[in-house]
Length: 247
Image (tube, rainbow, N blue to C red; front, side, top):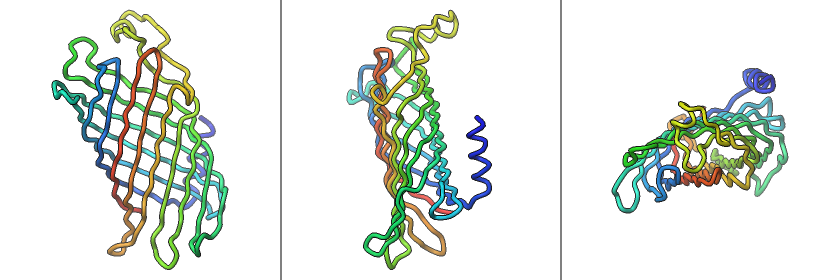
């Protein structure tokens, strides 16, 4: 907690680059606690990305927030799933490279982040246990790079992160939420995880460009959340087009 507070204090003292984006994409959702079927549909999301640094060669403090909702259905179209997720990540990134490539400035930072995810999935077909809660805390390595295209005001940005270790809430196979919360029957519901149990990747490739005296950002966000804990499988694989503004 003290480290996060110090990081936030440092963030207030430094210059910030902020980007606010909206995303639209397709998602493939599977949660075997609710259904053995894959569900497919549309994902809408809001993305806030902030970087703070004293200068181009200093430590970066990066914040990433996403809020998303999706509506999916199986190929049989005999039901629907509604999901909502929020994700917050705070990262400390150290400079690794600061050079020129083809006359364009290239920088790369790398470090680690603390990530929190909270959300739900609701299945309209299920009478018993129609919903599943999602809660996870992770430590994740992160890389961040930007490239200023020579003789233009265009900037390419790329960022990627993957959880290495963490904790995840999950009911056990066949266990109801009534047993967990009303009867207090704990059954390995707070699960330590590693990258082997949660092979997840979140990455963002964007292009900044000037227009009407403003700077806009457009690009692709790939979000591949996966987990196998307590004999239950989960994935939410989403490909999104994102667009927004840089401040």
